[in-house]
Image 1: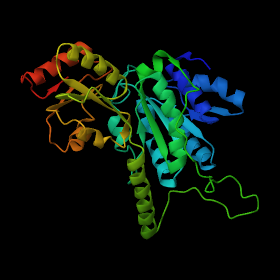
Image 2: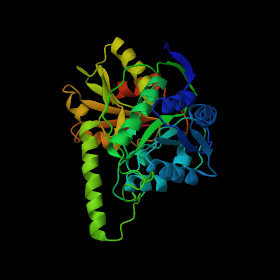
Image 3: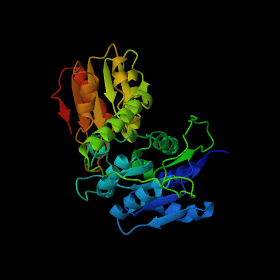
Image 4: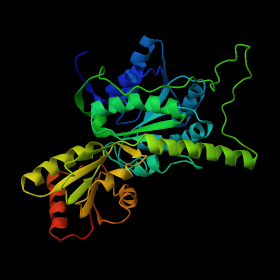
Length: 358
């Protein structure tokens, strides 16, 4: 099949269907409302079901129920809506219910704005709910990559029995780009879902989907089991891109759509003779710590985000505080420009830097 020109939000929906997701539970919110609209039209055509819940809280609990039956299921929302889903996400993590949660981020806090942002990094990577749990987080930089990551997210969710988040933003959701749905993808061996609560057929004891453990000893053992799984994810599922980092003395760190702006900055600065490069995390958790061991000439790191610097702590940990970490960002729906990013980089290289710029 040739590439299809699609709007991001609609491509996200088609990706879910291509991945075998036939059930979606959600609630409309800008800037991702075209996604549930698309799925409300297309899911019935493949024998699936779309349900517009009465709230985001209801939607994530419907995901918990459907995912517990072993079917592939997804929900989507934007920042404040995903915040409302956090309790249900922890239930899914605790009960080991695989599902995909798509967040098309907008500015916050609170209701904020409908303009794009990256200010949900903490909520996605550090866990917005209670307990010792982690959520794998993919961070696409294009519509094509979002499609690829959504399809992969379903495999990761099933392989590890865990909720998986895809962290996009309003720019990717609203832009139109060509997408190839037939490209070759990583093949994974997904185990049979013998744990699913999908009827016994009179042949076995019922499976119970549950995150409640009243005996402390049992809960501790369950947490240790989950921790072992998270360690396996950290070992096997890290993804990142290195861009012109071989000789870079200043290395940018950026993800998602902002990384595309930073790439333009890198190209422009290199044309002027500056040795700069980019580390782009494609998974925000697990974070690509190993990438920071592959920049032997680096003297400075410059984090660029559409937030007030939520990724900085992970970058400092990744480089083991051996390099100075500076920051440039815009928030509230404002988008950084190559010129402004380049100016900040030149200040750092020239020694006229005060640490942070907003």
